[in-house]
Image (tube, one colour):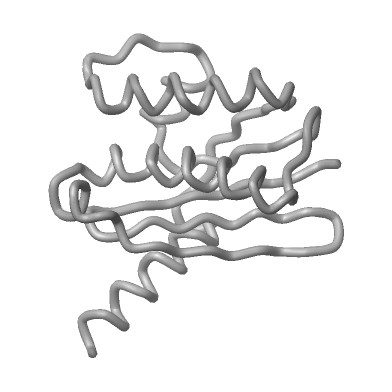
Amino acid sequence: MDHVFYSDGNTKRISWVIKTEDSIVEQSREHIEIYKNKISDLQSKYVSLHVGLFWGIGVFIIKNEDSIKIRLDEKAMFDQLASNLEINDEFISNRIKFINQLIAQRKLKIKYELIQKENNPSKKITDAKEIKTKND
């Protein structure tokens, strides 16, 4: 099956959207305490990608050998994932290792695409949750 995967994160929360031919699933989570306000937005985006892929596999939306277009709104992230660019951030390096491990174990066919932030539906979820939290 073909999927389009979006993810986003900030210092407080993560979100992801998985689109298939006939459905759109949106998810959002607050960071666990060890991450909340302790990791950067970029690190959080990697957590979101990792957790979202793992979640998608766990609820059987993403199955072995599926094709996934992972649409990223961060050029640094796109460069690091699409071309195995070396990175000096141990936290991000570990997330990349786990992401690649999931991809290899499930024999997923991955294509990374760079998009504009305004075309990332998961960013809208993260931003909306952030606004709601501030107003509560």
